[in-house]
Image 1 (cartoon, rainbow, N blue to C red):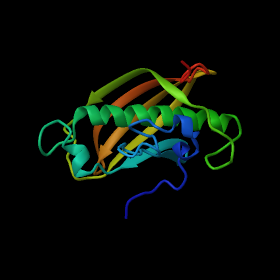
Image 2: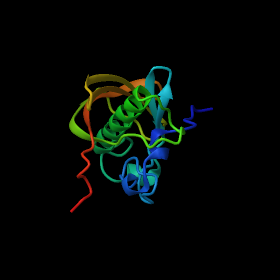
Image 3: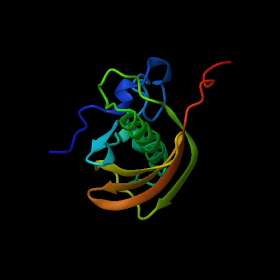
Length: 163
């Protein structure tokens, strides 16, 4: 039986900011990545559908752009989890979590990621400024390390979404 995330930080994002293609729960065509705690690390588990996998790449392997999106959304979700916890809250507490945006994204592809298996992103979060976090992520397919990444995430400016 695969691991599950009971309560993810994305479950608590306000509706106005729940439309990301990667982690937006309200985006009908999105992936719906969900990030939660596993001890002191963060975790996102996802099994790409056939439709997801046929959006590019080499047959039999997951498209590298999908892996980058997976690391990106895992990173911003992890930063949100970390600051929410620092503020004294956990997912499901009723408090709106902080939203983060990506300041930088680095991805290293370690080996081809096979299709048809569950992917797991595991993150370690480091606060580098009260509004800036760095998340180190490892992506596993069938318990084999396929990619690593680093996301620098910043608290979303209040002006985001305003025209």
